[in-house]
Length: 362
Image (tube, rainbow, N blue to C red; front, side):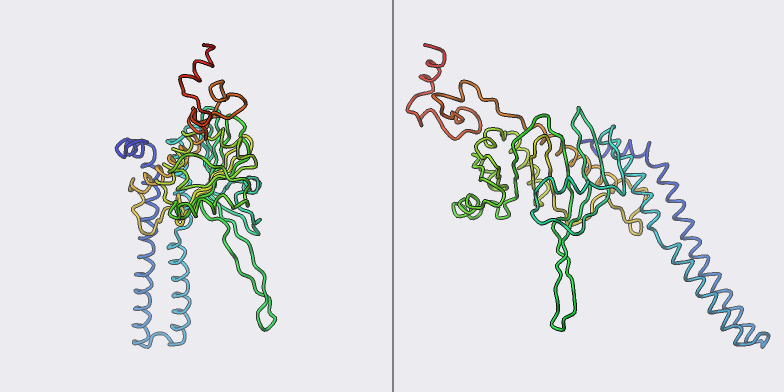
């Protein structure tokens, strides 16, 4: 992550000239708005003077005043609309920021992660009636493709009121950042969902997790912090457990502690899906309230982008745990001698030294 001072240097060189141009346009709009109001006040004052001098008819002044006021209001409202400036700001700043984060990255302000990826993740059981989003970022670093965007999915509930009239209500399935990352290897299907209680229910919570078969078999990993934040399920729990790495679980916990928002993971073959709930829209800028040339908001957006790209890249480092002769003995799983297994040398009544001697043929 670049420091603010490093980012400021990039900002001043590559972004500030373009933002200064937008700022000048905003200034001219503000001046023009003020000018219209002043001109309207002067014209109306002159017309009332003419009425007082009985040089024009009152009805004519009233009709003319209505047209002038309506025209002024319409023009001022058009000039006050900052949506085009906001869109241009997003395209300018976000396109440049993704270059800072990932030189090979691409930004599409109106694009979003495809609907097919959302369904393929199988993270959310209900199929949405509405699916949309914006701010799609795509990067490819060292052969790893990462794409993410804001996504909103919702389903519509149809009902009938007491009078027999049809009504509908929308329910949000997901609203936040949805990410898809390619994987260097194929992994067994596995879904990891957030533990909202953060392990506060102890043994009862553990048994509840174990009994929930909605997403498949419970994957019982030996990582206390990971178990406090997440619950893993897979079609083949034993295989999934042998392949999920300590490094991945450490990084997932770090991400959960940093974001402090519900995070979901899904592994399907050579793809990893990550869904992060966010209550506030990301990559947005309020041109009404903020100084458009201030680097602090772009730096905040830069950190968000960099963090999300790093999630896709670092979580992709989850490696297959190779099963060696030291991990297997007599057809039994000896994972306790590795980082993630559930058995130890004590479970078969042999010491580590005795096992090593046997494996080395002593």
